[in-house]
Length: 467
Image 1 (cartoon, rainbow, N blue to C red):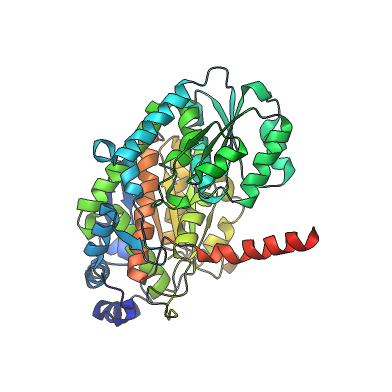
Image 2: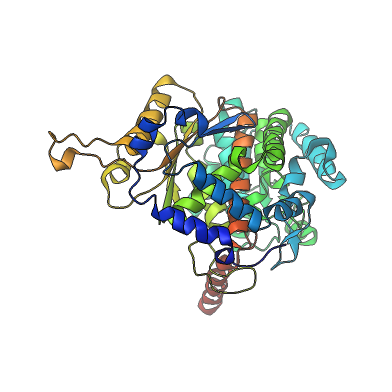
């Protein structure tokens, strides 16, 4: 598979020259001069619809970016990902999270784990509250899914990541030891924060505890009555679909979790089969590359217009920045180009009354993804009005400068067919494939995370010194 720098590709040079012609382009003029733009610059897949007509690019831009994909050997990389071959060379591992939601074609170990998860969930008589103890990918994904689908829950779940005692105390408020199940999620069963909370749960009187881990012996020694396995080929931030999502599985039910997996599978199939210029996650990736590397945008905002999706930006922060926040390429060489932008955001309408001021009139241009599940007319109207205001602005000369909006701020609208489990699964899988595609284009390993280790090691040393 190709591991040469993208800057060595002919397409990269051509895109850089092409970008010069877009320095003074305006989105309002693009829309005005091409009435078909609002239908032509749209992609659909797995029930989702991406309207990127308000991005500052054209058909030739997309053609050149698709050429870059080809020169980077994207088809080979994509095949390796979907077939479970090594795509994480620094750890010599596959990243086969798509196998976790492959349905009937999933590996036997995946089907066996799902069956055991269903048995455990069915045997939870007397359990009123599930408390998930994890951190990072063992927390953010399941927490998001439970929060988004909470109205359909059959059991209550709480999620604790911080070792601050107040976090666990809040999760246990009103709970009783006999009716509380603790789920300790740690691939290695060595995560200091998670184990600290697990010890605290024991001291509280927790009697029912299961673990999700690869380190079965350590989990058993700790007192786990059951240990659900985590495949070695699944990274934390991609592990929602595995037993790491058991708390969400048990709280929402096997049927609802199955719909989540089905939605992700729909997106996997779209990603694997749609041509680049009609492929929703690939287009998201190409637009991001264009904005970061050729238009100089260093941050990216995600604004979900649904209270149920308020945790989505936090999940995507980890997915994008831990995956692609890298400074060396596959060959260990320093990069001469930017990689992942800073990802941030918040729930849509409340954020309009805080940081949207910067989005509209600030000195930094921040590309925005508006997520619209179409739940309420008021929410959808606000999302689309904000997108138009960012893209079009207003330069009415009768207004004082302070009241003028420059516009020309790139943004996309990602629409969902409601907020069911299947649509949510498709949304999260689309972002995973976007991140992978960008990693291929940047020539980086999207599946290691060595940058998180140094601080943890230094913290452990400090703790030893203080004992």
